[in-house]
Length: 562
Image (cartoon, rainbow, N blue to C red):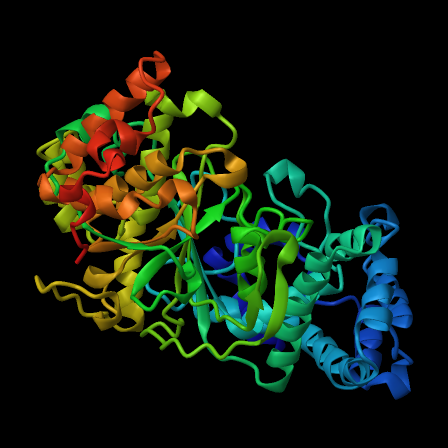
């Protein structure tokens, strides 16, 4: 067994991947194999035998056990906030019922400890399987900025890594230097103890429910985490970030746009890429006090959190696509009113790679830029950011046919100069099982689509608005332009009842009636923004574009949306 483990860890690809991530893992590498320190193994075995053996039967004792485990790993006390252990004790002793507490310490904690004991084996199996994908590196590694790549993790390995987070076992040293967020859960409990915030309590309830679920039935699927990059400079081997004249010259037709004044992105019924209104540090404040769109998504789909382990901050030309996470929790409310409301039965199907058919794309908008959001630079940055997220790496040929007539030269699309990530994606599809791509010109209603890249649209909403201060009307148009240029067949746009978006449906109808393409709509947005910057108009974009709409023009108001 030792020899096979050593051989697995000695492959060049595995060594390079492991070297990049090992400083951020709590394990040690010895004789080309991963191990827990022996005293740690004994402590985890004690926990795995249950409270009669370990005496861990309350939140207070559990907090002490976490501290002891950290000491066995020689993790510094200074890396753990003094209030964190008080927070653990508070939650499990005061906020959890006696029956739930007995189940937690009697059944769940022992299984979590057993999962930790198996982490070295799970990681070595992971690297062995990752090495089998011909020509494509998929092993767990640090996916640094400007490094296009993809990581595949089993849901079981994700669960083990999240137990490390829950027990605060990840080393925190040098994470900031690599632009990585904190990954341990201590700050969740610090915030609970210091503020007694109801939403914070309910975020922890989501995490606890996740662990209860995986202990009752461990999921067996896979999740992929992909860093997508559009290089800022021209390169013969990459598709570069478009310049302004690219957008103005585009003759691509605008895609179908469907407005929903109610409903949530995560509940959309279609085959769609669901937009995460992300912080540049993926996950945002999920493990702190944050409780808005991105943070809530990370709580109800906790497997998203593991991406924070190895995905540094996004640059302006990057996005992160995550496919396959399972939703475990239902909820009500938002921000301070967020409330865990029980188990969620995720009935999404599974693709040929063993991933749930849930695609999430993290794109970070500019924050608090005020009037500067109307400058050409900011308009281009936001449109390219959305395009980077919506762009489908596997559809190279179709993009080639579009782009060679605008800004990109034919040499950039030569068969020998293909985007490396596009090639790796193609290899992955071959390694698992190819997903057939078909096209259809039939009118689409979102609940009639099949899992097929040609039919994967965009589900989004008021991206970059709210606390980020973006103009909702401008942001809606930017996303429409990006989705259309990316050849996505439709956008499902959820307004969340935002007053400034209530005319969106009518404006969309009118724009479609004009038969504008991407370039023409882009030019209108640029002209409006120019006037806005020069204070030549105080109107919103919709008022400026279609003043008759705001005069209750019956020709507009009576138009129905189909």
